[in-house]
Length: 113
Length: 115
Image (cartoon, rainbow over all chains, first blue to last red; front, side, top):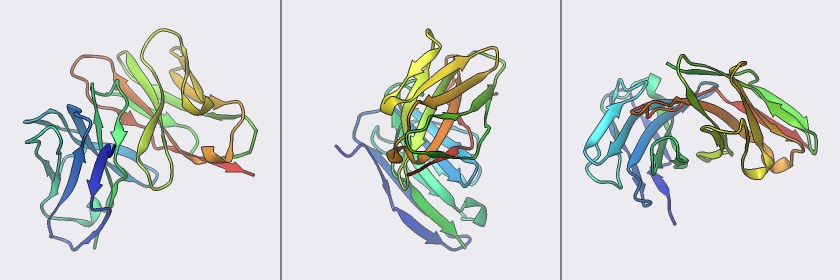
């Protein structure tokens, strides 16, 4: 029972490089989310999706892109990495928006230097 | 828009002592309220939630919280903590309206249980 799986666990990027953070869930959840967590700042919503083919911006979407071609996968793309994107990224899913528990992955720790 | 203020960034407490983690929210509309817990190197997991009805909500691991609309608070309590409760706790709020998909999280409170 894998739940929400995020890869990679850790990554170091140089300024200007690009990468994709992978997220997949095996619970058939329609709702999926990407958050970033910075020390002492809580979690900020980057993007979310209410189903395959539907995505929308959250609170801090600048510098990121997402796609949702299947129910299972919700990758997050960083096109031109900047030091301000150094953070821990969490993917989450739920069966019925935020009223049901969000199931979180274990996070991707990204450093941009 | 909604916002959440967690009044303490760190709370040390001795094992078997009671604890209260404070949360205040701000919103111009009705809200749902949540407490999530994050253990080291893990994602968050739901402790409890208030959607409607009784203002005293019981969650997992012996935690409970009370919704106080007049004071716009949703404080988390446990009568006797264990070492395993050491974690970071996040209060979160969401508007009740249809189409409101976002949870707004507080900055977190680190609970340290001292043996």
